[in-house]
Length: 107
Length: 123
Image (spheres, rainbow over the protein chains, first blue to last red):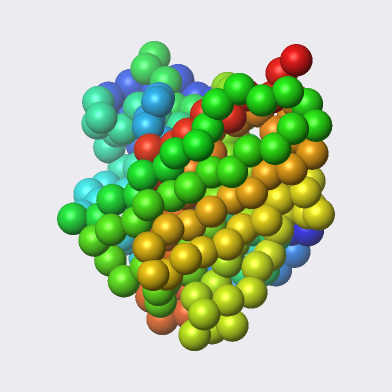
């Protein structure tokens, strides 16, 4: 199984801050990497697919990038509605696997 | 508008069985790959399994922890996805989400999500 290691597990930030979340795959997954946002009590929402493609309707302050087996989700200027938990997920092969999540909290 | 509505969750004893259903509307269910994803209380997301569309073979894949105990099926005439869960364990306690997979070029992702149904396995 492909392991997805996400870091940090949590971070405290302020509105307007730049946020970077990293996800590392245990083997090559090309760009088969997706990012999701989940708010408490709600289902996850797709943000980024194919490592860097922004899902329709998602604000442009969200971006994704890849370098080998390392993937990054960046929020350029954090807004109040962005406080949530973020998950990466590989779609390269089954079993499909998620990272452990990164909780973004208000400082 | 897309809707995925799960049902069938509840309290079940260890070793028991439960069947979840997911009623889909607003998209072409028959050609869509469908997955179940679960989330234990206070924990992260875990993929449970997938069923492909019949045009793509209708085959299923499962996560290791549920292989041999859970079965995913679909009834395209009713636009409904099912998850039959047998030999349930306390560690199967979670909110179970039904998801519709989307694709763009070769990228596959969980596009639509239901609201989730809670399964509690406890004596």
